[in-house]
Length: 232
Image 1 (cartoon, helix red, strand yellow):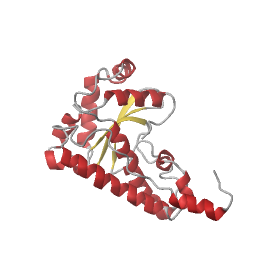
Image 2 (cartoon, helix red, strand yellow):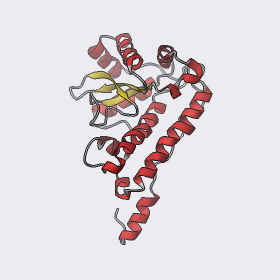
Image 3 (spheres, one colour):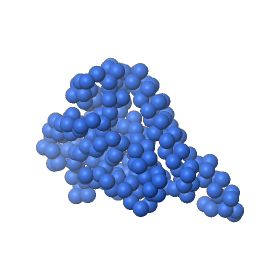
Image 4 (cartoon, one colour):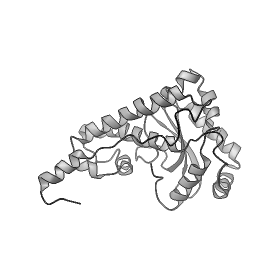
């Protein structure tokens, strides 16, 4: 809410900043599929850097701090973002949302029971089977040139779709080739896998399915079907 004095209000905005969310599990929880050293560096260094860069950019335009992370991503490519910081917000606001989302769709290999009935039915109607979806998702992740992400999401027509995005773009952003509400994501930047898998990206992609948190993906679907964007 707007405080009584504008100067106080802008002081309040200046103090607002995005912060690094804690991982919902120990850094070693995804072993042996994703190693603890990679998780530590990926979370505490790479993700933190996106947050720091985003906060620094928004300090120049404090009024934008009233936007949430989803709204910032939905503003990418529009006049809502000043040209001075548009690219920084695209890269770093995207990086912050993408990583916050990514951590939650993974869990320890023994801690998940597979897709909910609702998700399984939609996977079957959209792709034919869970295995076919995995093949298509793996293909999108493997064929993304350079750095980027693969996504499973709910499309406007109520079916599930698969897409990939470059760099830190995501399907919430108007600049995306295919808009959808993400319910599952995989980071295919080399920093996500290089220490363990080096240049063997397909091996990393295959290993990812062992740590997918299907309970979270199913919750994401429920939220997306209700018209929301899964919380991060």
